[in-house]
Length: 280
Image (cartoon, rainbow, N blue to C red; front, top):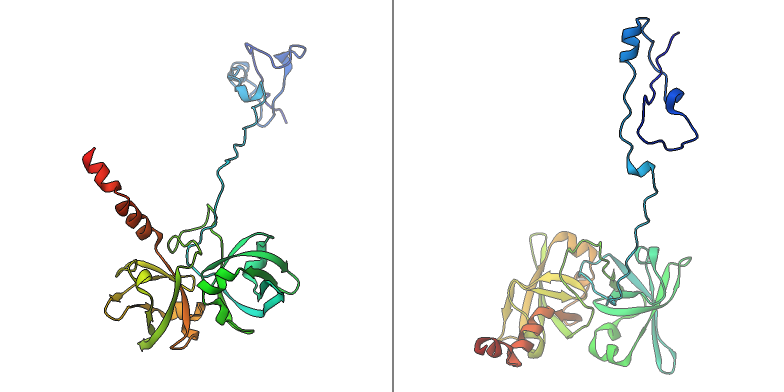
């Protein structure tokens, strides 16, 4: 079968001067017409040559930011872990060993893990036994409700936020402000009302429809009752199945972290920042 040859008729520049373009065959696909005039019409003119074929592209430089990244959480609990062991393994070292699954998928020594809303550092892990260990400082034991945990207790777990992570909750630092006491648990339909009593120093930052982290869970405050020193929130059915709060009883403590934005606003107001802007 006769074929037609597509070639460069007269390229202005050659990639390789030693090779003549006169008989440079690119590809053969179609039957060649027998008519000489039609045959000439099938030959293509030389296309312009893209620079990409003439010189290699320079590799892009990767810029590495020197800004340190601090741990941050969203308050969206990833899984519930179980306490396997806790106590003083050394005279001044309180260690807690937690069994988990999802958290261990990409765990590393030194990672920050939110345990019931408390930012703790991974000191050891075992992917075979699906467990990791964290150390608790004396101040952590005094400030949080973790001291009330025992072997077999379930805890909320969340890994530190990544730049690519969807922000489903709010900014949670894992720096517990204090504890609150559950004073009421009441069901309504398939939802659960939870009422918590806490100190005035914490309650001052809690507002209706505002954010609050309770045992590391990002929740929306419904009401604040200053006279009782209480606030409440509601848990829908799905949340009840995936966090530890519904497992607790009246009288038990929960870790609380208020929205950091309220603290910043208070600090700015008390420092005279607003007055300085007005006078400028």
